[in-house]
Length: 172
Ligand code: S3P
Image (cartoon, rainbow, N blue to C red; front, side):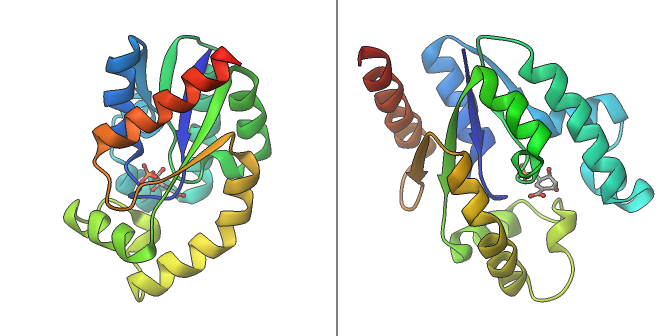
């Protein structure tokens, strides 16, 4: 069984995923990192040079390969689960954990990380986050087995909360 962490950009999927994997003795894989490794370019370059559609194709290929493996925590890029095929593949072998955060928190985190999010480089960032988030939130919620609000919590606390849920489910 895998644990898939998903949700909007900047909610802490990678940071939480690494801690969770360590605590649970599982492998850790970040879908975006996997794409970057295979393409030999960062995400911003892929979007700029090949466009979003090409990125989504790479994301699909990587999701297919990773979802077929076992015993790992998977940090999904924010758009990965919005594709029906990706979601089906992930759901098959993974408990699906949605991480959420307020738009202001997301903005603070993505700004701290610099210009790495091609979907947030145009226009007013907070407005862009709000509109993308409200368009995505219903689909995120529908895909989730468990939802963790990350506001005011450390990655460590979030990882503990997820472990509590997984233990309760396995004990049931
Ligand atoms: C995206 C999220 C990014 C990355 C790409 C597109 C999205 O991943 O896959 O920029 O559509 O939400 P993070 O969620 O890890 O930032």
